[in-house]
Length: 334
Image (cartoon, rainbow, N blue to C red):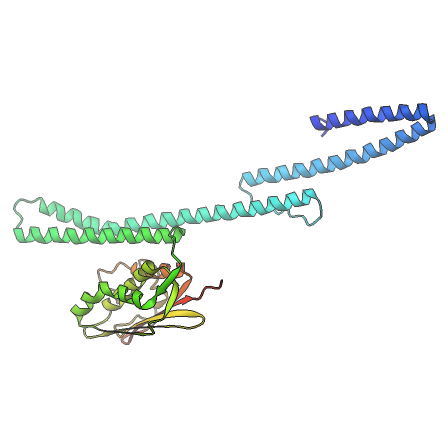
């Protein structure tokens, strides 16, 4: 501590002031007064020295603590409930340490999610790429029949469309996981939302001869993102169409109360087995009734979209009797 320049300067100034005061006391008053003043100055200097030494030791502890933090050890707790500037400084350093630790954990989590996303994309693209490579090699054969050539070309086109949709969906899911998609908070007319969601599946329903019914009050609304919610409903409806037999029925009901707005999508299709129910919203999960072309990403995306808008989705199903998706968008408290 004595080696510090500011301490040396301070001691020098105190020494000069003390000497001048002692000389003045001895000349104006008496030698006894000068001696008394010397004792008082010595006592004050002693107290000041030990107080300053204590503060320097505390500062040294803080410096060592910060060094440990920079080395990656954030487990130490230096919080201090005693009043004073050093206690305030300790508590503020602890708060900053916690914040940095949480940010570091979030960054590690995001890195793992990115790694998983890349792994998922690689895994899902491997099969169609292998198929296209094989068909491309066959197309290079000049003796290949024209009918077979058209068939392979059409298959390659289908695989490319499937890959485009897959990559687009995975990128959307990755953005949702990272929280980088700005979901709008606007008043959404539920009837318009459902009508928009139904449009892409009208032809598949017509082909299978499915009947369709929508019931609900036209005034029902909720606060959320119209386009993203429509995409979630489209994925759920596609799943219903896929698992509903010919001449089956899909029913959509919607309503509103003081707590939430609900949308219920029900079919009378194959249903989901009890063992598959806990995993249907997990990406790339394919249940026992899933079709061969199913990738297992549509319901996962619907789940992420609804949850990202502070909503909730539940599913009830029984094999042979159908499936019901129950979606809730809770009222936002201002």
